[in-house]
Image 1 (cartoon, rainbow, N blue to C red):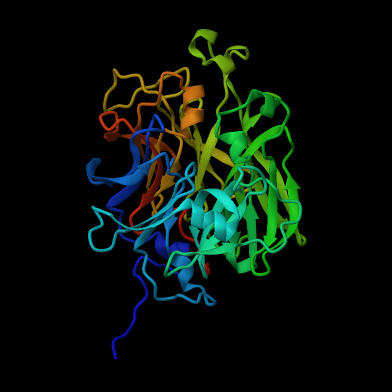
Image 2 (image 1 turned 120 degrees about the vertical axis):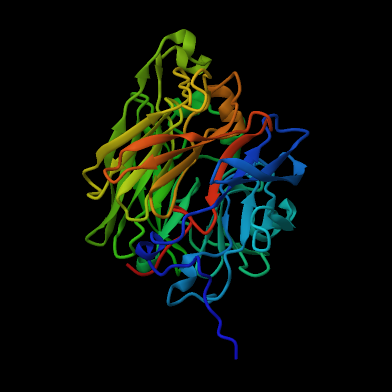
Amino acid sequence: MALIQPDPTFYPSAREAMAAPREELAYVALLDATGEGRPDGLATIDLSDGSVASVHDMSVPGDELHHFGWNVCSSALCPYAPHPHVERRYLVLPGLRSSRIYIFDVKDDPRHPKLVKTIEPETIFEKTGYSRPHTVHCGTDAVYVSALGNVDGDAPGGVFTLDHDTFEPKGRWEVDRGSQALHYDFWWHLGHDTMITSEWGTPNQIEPGPSLELLVGREYGHRLHIWDLTKRRHLQEIDLGDQHQMALELRPAHDPTKTYGFVNTVISVEDLSANIFTWHLDGGVWKAQKIITIPAEPAPADLLPEPLKQFGAVPPLVTDISLTLDDRILLVSCWGTGELKAYDVSDPFDPRETGSVRIGGIARRDPHPASPGRALNGGPQMVEASRDRRRVYFTNSLYRSWDDVFYPDGVSSWMAKVDVADDGSLTLDPAFFVDFASDGRRAHQIRLQGGDSSSDSYCFP
């Protein structure tokens, strides 16, 4: 009888995953800058030299590919996982604007992913009642997908699941959603049977681009929601304060014995700052505490896009965060100011800034060492750390209609890399710069071959 072994890229703990072999490839979503005529693409990047190994175009235009993920990952090694011997071989790519989902197989030829299945929007609408799939996470019992809204583009948004094997939509995840209406990201504390969800806005609020009226009216999301993961029931709501608009990325501690994590809010309507909160379990009640405030930076009005001229300042616009597998370094991307910051969060309530690099930015347009004379637009946006926490990769496009407001001259897209030292300091790798200008599409989400800091969850410390 042949012995069945778990996928070698699965690890019972984050500690063991940190000792895994170095990543060789990255998969990057490319968005059509016009939204019409040309399909989005999936680029495969050779990380040894930053060359583009291949690009696979989607079937039709207009998808706006977003936060894709793996079919399965290290959570398959949890004691209660029903699929311990599946393989990390499929990438699940959601089209945020089209509500279409693509399945790519990377097993046979990792440098040239193969499209093996397309889930059409009508199937998702019919089986889940949701639209605009945004984020994909591999769970113990299914592939989980967040959706920003219902079929009409309004609230509520939520989570639906796909079958691990067939990728057919199983249905809406929530049994009792309680007070939750807006949706964005989701993650979990598997050892504590708890899911956390965050809020951005409905598709009808988001797709036209940022709205000053909605912002001033404090109508974007600003809450976290706590769920019973097994019973699929809403337990608690945490309001971060309606001045803190757009509660986005959720990064729980990787050690399953820890009951805390981090969330970023994009902008404060009081002072244009961005803020980071720590959520935590305290005496059976989940709470959140603000731990980091990143202020806006003054700038001449003639360097600012129209919505910011009246303020004479550039908001940081923190749009992504990433927590290294040792739960020590939190990477924070300031898409507005063009800064990638690092904080030591060994004490999750008392962070210490350890590093910073500048590239792009609304007003600064800082160059990369690879081309020192070239002013860059966009800024650090989607950020992903390697499993050993030594390398961080990031791209510069947020979302087409939002790109065009804050960077009205267009986003000429790129992917860069920083090296992380033992003390948490950051250094731009002068030899690594992937320039997508000739392709013309904009780089967004990054996934690293074999796993990265934000694609796996673990059941053992």
